[in-house]
Every structure is written in C-alpha cells, then in structure tokens.
Image (cartoon, rainbow over all chains, first blue to last red; front, top):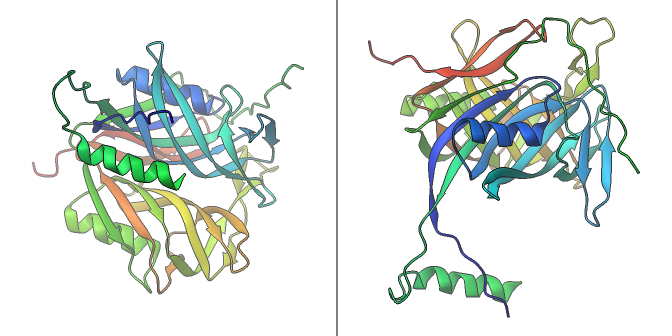
Length: 152
Length: 179
C-alpha cells in the first residue's frame, strides 16, 4: 500500500482580494498569490458571480453553465506551487439564472468574472521535513492517517 | 475541438486599469461560533464580530438551517446600465445549510454590512441557493456553525464602482480603531 504523504504546516497571512469583470477566476487567484509572494494558500471564503461557468466533472468532461450571470454558491480549494509557480485547484457549486445548481472543478481560463469576485485566501506555510534519524516526532499524525486509510 | 469563445460583457463605466485588488493581513484572528436560533444571519455575524471588536471578517458557514429566508439569483437586466441584476427575492424555508461563504464589511454609510452566498437544501434533499438577504434569513432551531477569520489590518469596504455602476466590496488598509 502506498504511503500517505502528510504535509505538516501552519497558516500565515490572510488575504482579501477583489477581482474585476472579465478576468479569469482561476488565473486571478493565482495572480493574487503571486502579488504577495505566496506560493501555497487555502480558500477561506468567496463571493461572486461569473458571466458563465466552465466546470470539469468526473470523467474529465467540461460543462458550460450559462445565464445572465452565474452565481457561485460555494468555492473550496487551494493554491499549490507547480514548478515554482502558484497554481489554483478550485471546486464548487454554481447556480444558473433558472436556479439550477451545478458542481465541479473550475476550468482555468474559462470562468470570466461577471460583476465582481471576492475571495479570502489563507497562506499555507509547510514545515521543513524532519531530518532523517530525528526520531518519531509525528507519531500522533501517523496514527490518524492509518485510521483514515482504513476507512477508505 | 477548440473551446467556444468566452462571452465577455461590456460594463457601463470606464474599465479600471487595476484588474484585481488585494490586501494581506498578518494579524488576522480565527473564531468559531454558532448563529443564534430565531435571530437573523445579519444579527448573528455582526453580533459575534462586535463582541470581539472586528469590523471586517470572512466566514465559512455549514450545517444547521434557517426557518425561513429569501435569496436572489442573477437575472438579466435589459434596461441596464448594469450587465446583470439580482432576481426578485425567492422565499424558502425551512432549509438546511450545506455550505456558505460570507463577508462582513463596512457599507457606504459606515455601517456593518453582510454579504453571503449559500448552497441550501430543501426537505426533499434538492439543492439550490444564491445571494441571501441577510436580514431576512432567520436561523432555525439547529443553528449553522460559523468559522470566522477576523481582519485586524484590512478593512472590507463597500464603495460605488464606476465600471460596473454597482456598490462593491473591496479591500483597503484598516484605519486604526483608536486614534
């Protein structure tokens, strides 16, 4: 069985950002992190509307949600560095103008902001990995992982 | 297959050169609380943040429900000038709260204002949601749980926005609370 990779860390600065119309949701969240020199972050809340939404659903298909505007209802996800550049992976739910709700992962470059999009991001600061032979300082975390593993 | 062109909208006002605004706060505080049964979403969030002395905060809410509420979704606005508007308020309740984000900010008159988007479910389990009217979302017997991040050095301020012809939240440096 593959080991679960557990990253220890702590949270740092809290950002509040506002994105203007026609900007891409995913790329703007990445850009906000770059503006502050942040490479990893958690989404801690968001409010906004999109002109249309493009969501990737299980199987890899992309669905298009259209309307006068598309309201985002929930948004969760993180920003992680990929080759040193912050990349956002964001999932959530949206409502179209008929009140139908859709969910999936927001596709980069395909989710233009309608009127405004606000997002709170919390910086994630990974702890340096423990040195080899340093003992077992993370016994408790490892035990928790085994329980989680068993339940999957 | 190439992707279809993006539908972009032309807003009524001049396009602001800065396409995003953000502020970082190294002194934000974290809190957990429940809304108050029988009281509104607005009262719960404003009351809790008033107790700890925060004027601006970001919230994640989950669980519990509202006895009744009204929410809006986006609607066309053919008369303009704004590219879209809110629909007429849609009443619902009792509803369960699956998840929501909210922000507490300062409105154009300096008063606290709550903005909240929520994913809800009805008695049949169907999901729906939108922009909640915070004064009219009345908490049910089992209150939603709130995780709050309260800003110390950032203020979320509502101000008129020329580009969109709407009043919109934006982050700014907080003015010191005392002198």
